[in-house]
Image (cartoon, rainbow, N blue to C red; front, top):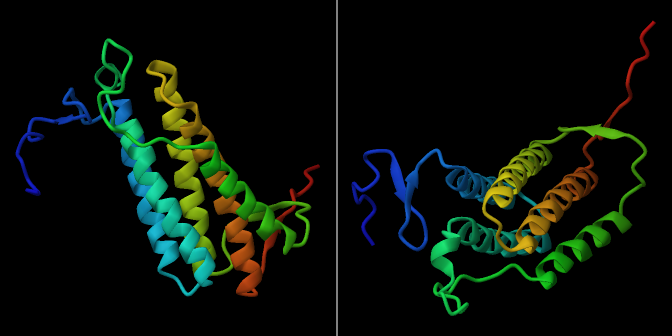
Amino acid sequence: MKIYTKTGDTGTTALFGGTRVPKHHIRIESYGTVDELNSHIGLVRDQKINDHYKSVLISIQDKLFTVGAILATDPEKAILKSGKERLNIPKISQDDIHFLEQEIDAMNDALPPMTNFILPGGHQTVSFCHIARCVCRRAERLATALHELEPFQMETLTYLNRLSDYLFVLARKLSHDLQADEVKWIPKKTD
C-alpha cells in the first residue's frame, strides 16, 4: 500500500466507490473528524487506566473505523440498480449501541448522582477523555449535517450520540477512580 499517490495534490480526494470530491467536502469533514476522535480515544487508552476500559476503548476504535467507512462511502456507488450492495461496508448495529449503553449504566451505578454540570479537568487523563467527548460531539454535528444532505444508516448517528455519552460518563468514572476532584459548575448570581 503506497502512502503517497499524488492524486490529492489538487485538493480533491476519492470516496469509497471512487467519486472524487473537494477535501473540504462535508463528507470528508465528517469522517476526518471521526478519525481525529479515534486518535483522541487512543490517547485516553494509552493512559494508566483499568484494563476493562482499555478493552472497551479498543472495541470503540474498531467501530469508529466502521463509522468512518460508512461516512466515506458515496451512497450512489454503494448500491447497485438491483438494490444489492455493491461495496462490502460493515454496519453499526443495535448491539453496538446497546453495548455502549450497558457500559454507561455499569459506570453510572458506581458513581454518585450528578447534581450539577461539571467543569472538565481534575486530572490529565480525565481531561483527555473530555477532549475526546467534545470531538465526538463535533463528529456527530458534522455527520448529522451530512445525513440531511445524503442519508446513510441512522444507527451511525445514534452510535456517535451514545459514544459522547459514554465518554462523559467515562470521564466521571476516571475522576472517581483517580480520586480527582470534580469541580461543579454553579452559576453565579448577578445583581
